[in-house]
Image 1: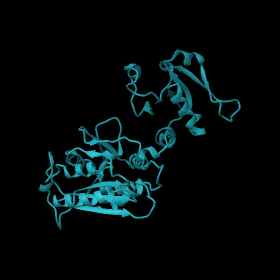
Image 2: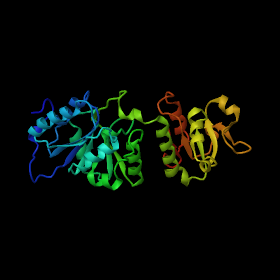
Image 3: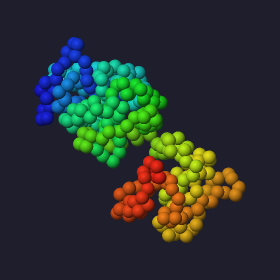
Image 4: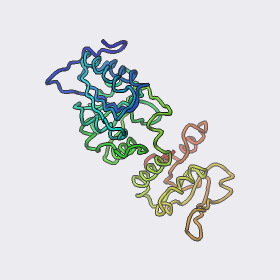
Length: 330
């Protein structure tokens, strides 16, 4: 039986019962965290049918033995466990492992869980309750970012968006899936409860993705989704991040930048930013002005909550509409 908060034994199961939720867990050399992860599946207070779908991607540690142990325990509690594995000498990557775990599962809804994370007992129940009201959404818990291990969506929507990129190490498969989700009209719905303990550690798969790779994908998405429809715009931040964004834009999009704006008198007094790396002659010089004198729309490259509210106050005084007059890129 489940420990505190768990009522796993009360779940209906057996032949002929449709599975409502498949918990999707990709595994690669996860012995340090896997016990806690799978215990958190066992402790869920979800009353409907649930299964665990694990795909072991060429682990060389004791992950397989830990999975086998929890298969017995979970199935005794009424939670079927499906185990797939890549038995070659080389892992195929997180995207491949997630896709395989989805393919071998059968639930109407998919609850994604990384093998180094821990779910709170109420996670599946709360996200399932929200998901049945919003069929085209990816669900996450409260927090500053939409981290992949908090995603929960219908199987139908997952296949509508398309599977994860299987490029392997160094590919941000979660970010690419999320962009496809948005491009196909998907939404993000937040469940305002703490649903997951997210581990950030040196062995995490996220560290195999270069920061510059993420940056370049974000810039291309910004160009496709926003800047392609604008004839001109201002970059709010004449410092390091604003200039980096400008340099990262395609040549055609760079020509749409009419100015940088800022509050720093030194930058404003300088008058302009010269794009020294440009092969154009003369080199492009972009004016720098005070934000009150700048013309929207803006791409804002200023992080929120870092200026004691000063930036937010400045933005609010302009009475602009987010998504029309400005977008955040920070």
